[in-house]
Each structure stands twice: as structure tokens, then as C-alpha cells.
Amino acid sequence: MNSFKPKTRVLMLAWEYPPRIIGGLARVVYFLSRELAQQGMEVHVVTADHPNTLEHEVDEFGVHIHRVKNQVTVAAGVWVTEQSPDFRTFITRLNVGMLQHALKLHKEEPFDIVHAHDWLVWDSAWVLKALGLPIVSTIHATEAGRNDGVLDRPDSIYVGEVEARLAVESGQIIVNSRHMLDEVTAYFPVKADKVKIVPNGILPDRLACSIERSTLRKAYGVAAGPVILFVGRLVQEKGVQLLLKAAPKILAAYPKATFMVAGEGYFRESLESIVRKQKLEDSVRFLGLADDAKLSQLYAIADVAVVPSTYEPFGIVALEAMATRVPVVTSDAGGLKDIFQHRKNGIVFKAGNATKLGAGILEVLGNPELADRLRVGARQTVLDRFTWPVIAERTAQVYAEVLALHQKSGD
Image (tube, rainbow, N blue to C red):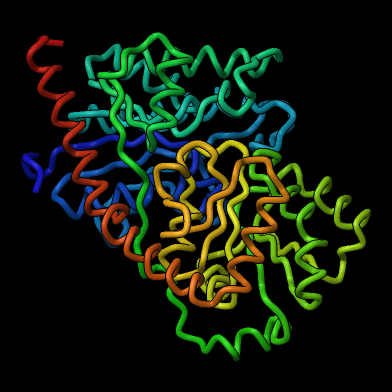
């Protein structure tokens, strides 16, 4: 167990937190917070508002959630959200509200440490550091990484600058993979010894499904052919376009195959256009966002899960598929290399290569013994390396290092 005194107060700053889920960050903060609370810390999460939620609540694990309720434009009196044309206004207002909550809580009883997740919360974290609080940051991804190192638009330049300030001013930086360590030290003026690798985790049985597979397949209308599943945000770097490019070859071998795409994002219209051009309407289903109940059913009916990312700091959806014993065909992008060993716990192909992606899917579908071996290897990988108690303990060790340095320096 960690060396923290009981009720050490941790302030988590995150722009998304369940039920507000934009990407993987929300679930990471949720499960990390509840596990730290179970290990004896007092965890307060300050986050953005979400419809039909309370401003303050304490969940069943003892995590305090504080939601900022003042994210409206002054002129129009309507929500400024992540879909708004003025995203920076949304972030500015969010940080003002987060800081108001944090300062009120800190005045009532001081926090010991602040954990800031990504650049979107840096403004409030910076003020808290100025008050003498030590800062740990998790950089889940970088703007430069998402754009192949090219920041040529005003918004991208702004995000890159904020990320750099967050990295420099943090006592320690947490990243989720070796790839992200290399990325952070390449793009920001920080040394490698300031960056700690703590992977994301999952609850291995969170998406277990109790309904019979055959029953579900009939209900989804896929009883006759294999199901190839993608779960994730519909953005270009997630690589769904590569899956669609590979689809005709797979359908030539398995005419009744169904490609299920669970997620939303700006790239959906482009993907739907590809489907129409390739006349794949009868084989591809866009399912929208899927909650845990639906995800558990999708994994239960899937024959293959694909992770075709061209940029991937970590890949938590890959862990979910592995935990549910679905064979995974994955690219070698970014942090995925830290998770997979080719033909031991997944089929790995070169990122961006649709031909190799298709070949990997066909290999799994055509080789039941290989598929079974991948299922066993993948599940064991999750149990050995990616459960939340392990991840929380490693995070606590980073906190302890930062607090020790903070106390030694007298900051």
C-alpha cells in the first residue's frame, strides 16, 4: 500500500468526468479517483457541468464531484460547449468556474496536491500553484502529436503553448506510454526524469455481459456472419477510414460480415460518405455513442475488435476489448506498442496500412486456434499490468515524490 496519511486531500482538475464523456480522459479520471479514494485519500474532482447532474455530490466510493454551473455566454444566455465555434471562450469560463470551486474548497480545508489533466485546466492549475500547491499533471496527448509535429493554425499554436507551460510548471508529469514520454520530451523543454510512465487501466469485468451471445446476435441481426467492431471517437487519427478501405476484401471472403462503428465525432460525415461511395451501406452500421450496457453487448457479439489508429497515445478501448476476450487487430501507433505483442495478445499491423489491417482481420476470422490464443493472452495481459489498483498505487508514488520535493524545497 502507499505511504499516504489517511485523508490526504487530492484535487483533480478535469474538463470531462462521467456522465460527461468526450473521450478516454473522463473514464481515466473516474476510475483513478475512485481507486485513490479506496486507498484512503480524500479526492475532490472539479469538472465541467453536464445536464441533469448535481453541482456537488459524493459518490459511492467517497469521491467528491464538483461541477461548474456557470458556463454560459453573457450575451445569448446559452451553453458554450465543446461544439461551440468559440471553444476557447468555453475553456476560459470553465477555468474561472473551476478556480472558484477550488479556492473555496481549499479555504475550507487545504489540499495537499493538485492533479491537472491536460492543457484544458492549466489556467486554474497555474493559479493554485502560485498559492503554493504542488502540481502533478497528466498529459494524455499533445497537439503536436495529433498534427505530426506541425502547429500552423492559431488554435493549435495556442494549445501547444499552453501544453508547454503545463509541462514546465508541473512538479512531475505523468504519461501513459513510452511513446508519450518520447513525445513530451521532444516537444517540450523538460527532461525525461521529470516524466513518469503510468499506463491507464480498466476494471477487467466492467463490460462482462450476462446475455447469451446467440441471443444478442439475433437481436442485433448479425446471426449469419462475423462482426468486426470499432469503438472510439470518430476523428481522423482513429483510422476508421482504413477499416472501410479494407472492408471490400473482407466482404469478398465473408459476404455477411457486419462492421459496427460505435462512437461520435467530427469525422462521421466523411466516413458515411466513404460508405456510400463504396456501396457498403448494407454492411456498415454507425451506432453512435454507446454506454457501458451497450458496449458490453457489442463486445459480446464481436468476432474481432479493431484499433486502426494512426495516432494513439495509449488506447484504452484496446484494453476493454482484451478484457472481454475479443481478439484484437491493432496498429502499432504510439502507446499501442506498449500493450501488444504480435500473435501473442493481438495481431499488430503497421499504422496506416489498410491492406495489412484487412489481412489481420481475415487471419483471425479464418484461424479459430489463433483467435482463442489471442483471447487468453489478451485477458492475461490486462490482469497482469492494467488494473486500477496497480495504476493508482503507481500514481500515489508519483504524488509522494512530488510532495517530498515540495517539502524539501520549502515551496
